[in-house]
Amino acid sequence: MKPKISRRSALGKMAAGAAAASVAASLTKRMTAAETAAGAALKGRINHSVCKWCYPKVSLEDLCTAGKEMGLQSVELLTVDDFPTLRKHGLICAMVSGVPGGITDGLNRPENQERIVSYFEEVAPRVANAGFKNIICFSGNRKGMSDEEGLENCANALKRIVPICEKHRVVAAMELLNSKVDHKDYMCDHTKWGVELVKRVGSEYFKLLYDIYHMQIMEGDVIRTIRENREYIAHYHTGGVPGRHEIDDTQELNYATVMKAIVETGFKGHVAQEFVPARSDVLASLKQGVQICDV
Image (cartoon, rainbow, N blue to C red; front, side):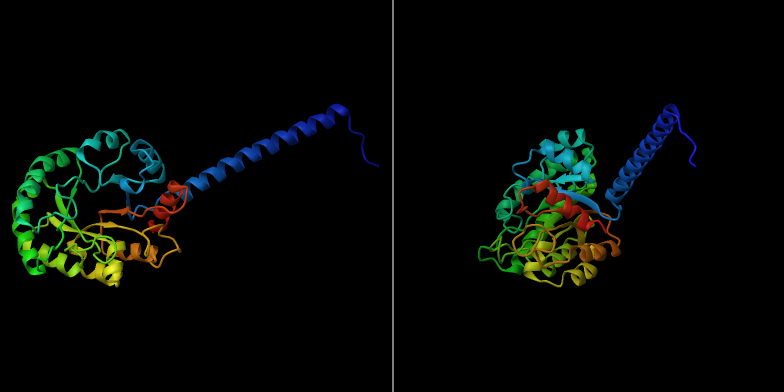
């Protein structure tokens, strides 16, 4: 025969059970949140950045806020005028932009060189004072010029720029771009040409920006190229091939494997997402890209 349970006793036991269940649920919720946060935390072997131009409908303020939450250290291809916004969010600009002439009218033409040298004289100390490191530059288009003449002209110009960079301890980084799809006639379109230029200049304050998307189009053989030329590379950009969209399995490169190879070279610079999202939730695409590259 079961003992009789009073109403008061029954209610007391129910209340105690409910309290215990509430504590357990709260504990479970806290543990789940902690595990989620731990899972979302980045590994720290890749320093993550993003190129602002890929997000024209997202304000710099909003991109900084979202990027910070994702674990980005940098928003880049910005000018010195954007530094205060970055500073407010505790971010850096891992690759500073704004060089006169842009991609097409670069250092391979003597008539462009004076204004580009002047730009470095003006901007390099401001970049250094902000605590940033890299300033982008470009070879320019061929326009009928031979690659050898272009090498000589670029080297002569960079030998004027490098002392400025050395003084302020910043790096001039020339970007490798494809001339097959996106930047017809661009001269610095193969790693071999860029590496030869770095060797001729002969300073640790001039290196290459190796764009994985562009060099996959021009050369392929990305991992071996990175391993063999690691000492000449200051920075990396990503992008899905073909199309320059998300870097997931909708394109041909295995970015996780490429990132592991970059880490194995001892690289300590930044890797910037430079794909143009094809999906409507562009920040979700950015977060996915960061997670893919966080090896």
